[in-house]
Length: 123
Image 1 (tube, rainbow, N blue to C red):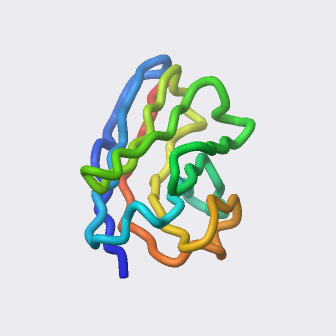
Image 2 (image 1 turned 90 degrees about the vertical axis):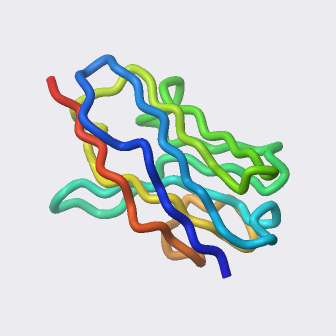
Image 3 (image 1 turned 45 degrees about the vertical axis):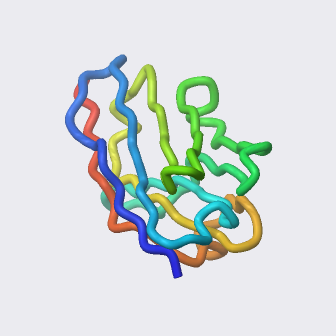
């Protein structure tokens, strides 16, 4: 089992940057693909980015491509989401998730979830 805790959220002005971290427990962290999702009030949870266990492959939603970067440090059991050029529409609760098989873009395929961290971008 993998337990995860997100941090790094907060309030930022449009055009600013934030770096989210997701610290995971468990010795098998490096074998999991990891993803970031977000959910705004009244909306479905949506895919943001994902990274394979081997770090070789990364995937991004079109809405964040070129602005967000996902990375991981398997030695520290941590996955990151660097968010640049933030927009008000990026405001949401951001969740990290772990998938035993692959860096999926569908939330239902993920096995474990963190509790989320709030990101608010003011205009």
